[in-house]
Amino acid sequence: MEYQDMNGLLELETKIVEVLKSIYDPEIPVNIYDLGLIYDIRVSDDNGVTITMTLTAPNCPIADDIVLQVKESVEAVKGVKSVAIDLVFDPPWSKDMISEEAMLELGLL
Image 1 (cartoon, rainbow, N blue to C red):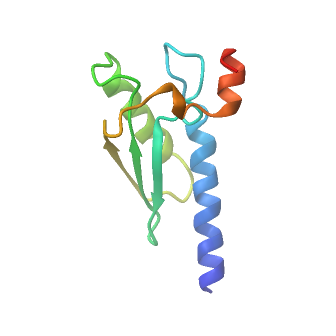
Image 2 (image 1 turned 45 degrees about the vertical axis):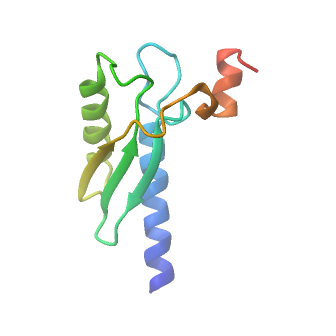
């Protein structure tokens, strides 16, 4: 039973990552997951989700919009019971956090 539970949590986390990859930073044509804005995704045994994330800049004018979009998008994933967003700025985001795939897409490699 424990293996199936773990498998279900991994499957749910995979669906969450897929959803996060559909959300784009409006100023940089890369999704927030590959941009490195998602620091951690935790799925509890009762399918509550906590996402630790950051923004490219603490004074981002659309910070509230991005956080709300992440929350609402993840809440819409089948099986997710609740979503909490932990917005942090430590460690600060840097371009070193961008995935290799996104770096290629942006012409930075």
